[in-house]
Image 1 (cartoon, helix red, strand yellow):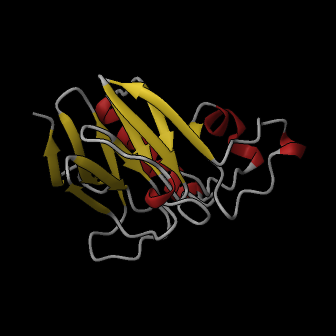
Image 2: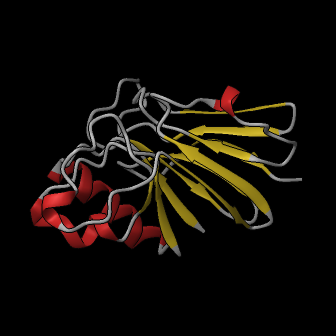
Image 3: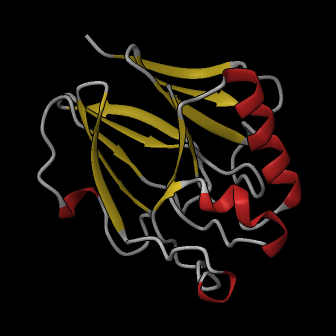
Length: 162
């Protein structure tokens, strides 16, 4: 399984919540939909993310952390994953097909829904959530995509692959 996060904004508290989820779930990797805003004190953590660049991500070069691209496409668990932050590119910029998973951030509002067989996931934010769910993240696994609370790891919503 892979942990999906976005909009950490360099927050130590947000990083602690993400690391708590890493400890709880033991994911294979962490996908980040941007606005990591890396803090030099946590350069090892930020360099371990499979990430895209958000509108606030400007401080990579001086820390030696590779500057992330605006978008990524990969295949995980037999599904095409398209990930972007959501400030410059959106789902309309891609030809998405049934079975694809589109991941974006930027709004700080957690959302998980499906349209025409395409799963749309915004994991929310661990540091600056803008919804009543509080700090959130998501999991991508062979079974599906699961949005959960970073406070108690309870599932908020889920979409299972058929």
